[in-house]
Image (cartoon, rainbow, N blue to C red; front, side, top):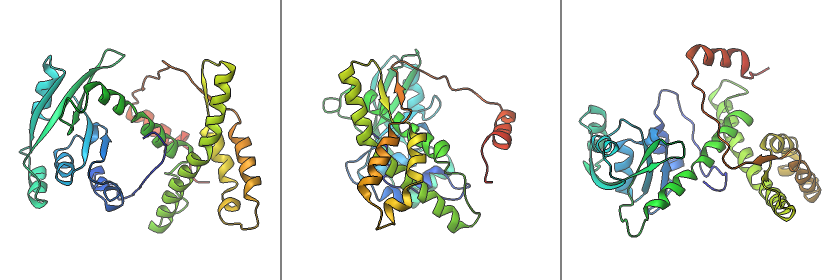
Length: 283
């Protein structure tokens, strides 16, 4: 979450759930016992929690307002930290999944309630139940790191345009998808040193805000040099890297503490208009 790197990626049909991608070997196989998975509220699913518990993975999940019964009770209470037993819901799908995969019908979890800067409250669910070993305030910080995931996804979708496929066949879509992930990871790795140098220079000058590499600029710079960098044995790597570092410094953005952008709620009509007339399409 702190390195802007996609460790593993997967793509599948739109009719399949996000949970099926999480359990995909390409993703699940990249984790191991003891790893902590920090997930958003769409993953507040009993089968995910039970599967992680069975395999020794730890979880930190943000819970929506209406989720499990014990979580709903915790929302209404004045408690800030509570251990509870989560049981499999009575609906058919989770019951069937639990039986087919030999998962436990109940799991011990810990619920933590935090008040955000805007006055709203959020509840985190975690499998790390030892309050002496895992202090409550640490979870707020760890879940806050997940914002880096969201900005990574934003770049994948809007700067690297992962949904802008060059063809309609399965092979061409997968080629474009995995190519974008490779490009995004390479951009993160190559631009890190430049960003660190820019920040150190800003500190020496006493700047109040820290510069960040403008990912839209670095993406374009890297795209034009990918072939030379990876496939042309005659190209001087040192010269290409110097050129890239120079371009990475172009038009940096600034990180200003306290700046917030309220999420605008769009109507279906505005969403349709965006996808039809605003979003770029294949020429």
